[in-house]
Length: 293
Length: 288
Image 1 (cartoon, each protein chain N blue to C red):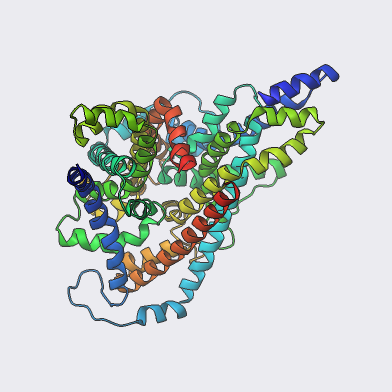
Image 2 (tube, rainbow over the protein chains, first blue to last red; image 1 turned 90 degrees about the horizontal axis):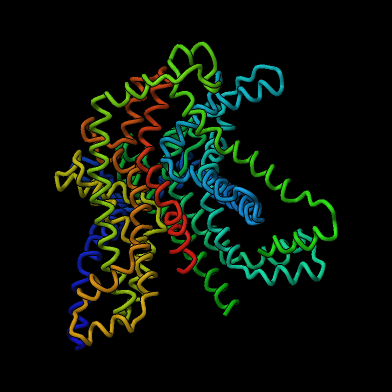
């Protein structure tokens, strides 16, 4: 009986674990290995250069710039969709007419690819005939020609807005799921006690939304770390590296300049950064679990 | 419910409650703002290049002009891109779900010492940005001589899909009563028969969720084809859109039509499986 159970565990896990091991875990370890070499991507001969790549990273101004942009990207790509999604969910939860239609409208962008979303927003930001400048021009009465994606001071933020537009539906859906889990007698009791709509939201709904918030935050952080495609499409990290993120910088160094050893070092740093965030997240989650028993 | 009841109670006190109307107007304005970008592309795809050049891209079209769609659908490369994308998306979707089913079943029904930790390791794969694996995977597939074929994309999507598929299937199998499995075992079934004849038939909702999620993600992917393909006849549709941009640099209508056609499969999947899709996004997460 026991031997049989062992057989089935091995038999059923063999394929998924070997695929996962070969194409996720092993490559990850490989990254660490190559981060200590000067491999150029094609030449089978490469040298070990010790910690050279990491020393170079520390003095690479483009790396510092990319790290800063990654932090800005992560913070805003977390705050905007989360707050926006919460707002939409609260509005939708009040049994408004046509709620299902609204839900679909807000959720639709999630189905579009980064390429399509990127293209749509490139058109919106287009300086001469883009929707944004057209609207600004109509409102102010003066023709607007600001090149949103071609100016260093606005490129990154313009992409973040496009990103938030796409991601907001996701947070909304999770918050809505959290809202339906709130027992309605609690709200009725609060209403009978004379709590205003605002007080009910602030002191009953929001605290009970904490589990949903944890999920939204986790998903947003994960997704925002993956937000490479849309940047590649919309700005390519430019102009003048003003919208470079770590993933973008790594891609450029590895696949444009063929400095794969150096690129691996950036990958390793990105991995460690993610590890720290995941660790913090799981710790917060455990704290929350203990809090709620 | 609560709000409706509360609103009812207040309606008795006050003659007019402006709240629902205000919420509706607010949502309607937001919906228009949300739809505007997508609608703009739809409108532009129905206009001729001359019409776009003369007037504004964002105005209503004079009539329905379908040449952009004809141009896109007749383009031989676009057809190749579509076939390639199906050839990658379908096997990768099936493969990742299949492996997730196997692993999810063991983790929920046949736990062993250390299986929790193993499960965590697998699921944590979900958290890391795929860009970390660009270089090593490029190296592996270069070594295998598989660069510039569809294989790397299929394999990588299967491997990267394992975490989410395992997580969702484990959570779903956990809701299948153990008594069901034990009854089948007592009657002489082995684990494989329990999985395929007992657990899977009642997991159709979870499978539908995963199928829609995986299909959408893999179809929409841009990163892996960018790294793994070079020749035009190996490109998938999302990379294809970007590479055709040069050819249609001023033909905005064609570009719009191309984007719409490329999004059609995922939009159809979304419309059909809407409820599943949204549930899937929350299921794994909220129960996890």
